[in-house]
Image 1 (cartoon, rainbow, N blue to C red):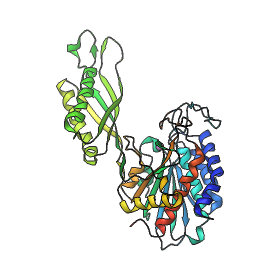
Image 2 (image 1 turned 135 degrees about the vertical axis):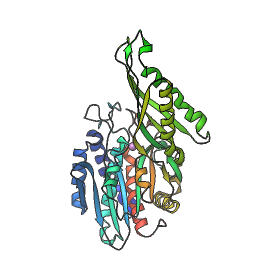
Image 3 (image 1 turned 45 degrees about the horizontal axis):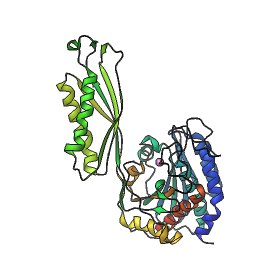
Image 4 (image 1 turned 120 degrees about the vertical axis):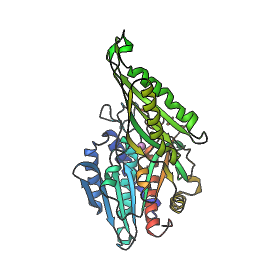
Length: 393
Ligand code: NI
């Protein structure tokens, strides 16, 4: 039986897993039961399982020829703080927690791939590692595994995300940049409080923060090359105690998105310059902290990207490939892509006929899981092809 046929036969298992994880989603850094269930599924398959005393997620290793390459396949496993409105009969049983980014699907696809690969263990020309990753939605869940040197000896990595931008039944392995860099920041503006009737006796942090907020947009309109998209968003502004008190402190949080690696690197410094000098001109101070940084997610390794495209075509024919439009969203797989040759693919979830046109992170996002075996097959085929020498490493 071909790998494709085996994957298709696994479809009921993959759907069952998806629905289980969907019903019992867990938030970033809290994936305790999810991790346990994944380990239970993998245990009978012959994987060596590495868990962590102070972190969720796991790494499962299937060792074949020790002289061969090592390929890592990754799925993220966390859910989002949303109240589900899909009406699905496998809807979340945890109020306010929902798999609205498809990580339930990612987990299920990789468990399917685990079975496909385990069945080929005796002839495996190298080693496969499966990373079930905690806390992608935090923006830096990947960092723990990097800090703990979990990827030593890994020659290539591969990840899949569901996409609401390409049709159900297609796969995208787009060359070049896919998703933007993401710099999340906090800016604290400090002034001096006073009675609201005597502004001259204080230093108003609300006025300074408002000016910073508006001046910040000049980074987009005047400092950034207009040929390169840049987003500067302040999402929260918090300050003030009462209507008749000059505010002494304001905290703003926001995010910077770009595909331009140079701008992604420089943006916090440019922002800091504007914030500090604007605050100073208004008698206040400003302090900028970068909370997390994800680089651009980009399929820059051409031969490896081609290997993934060829794997998809060899399984499903040329018609399977779609081109994914670039997105200003971000993905922490990019932290791994900076270290190891890697490819990030998308499995289509958009379905006009059924009305599944909701975007990721919507409380209505609910992909049809009848196509998830495609992703399982792609994971396994990519790993086998790269272990067999493809990918130009
Ligand atoms: Ni996601």
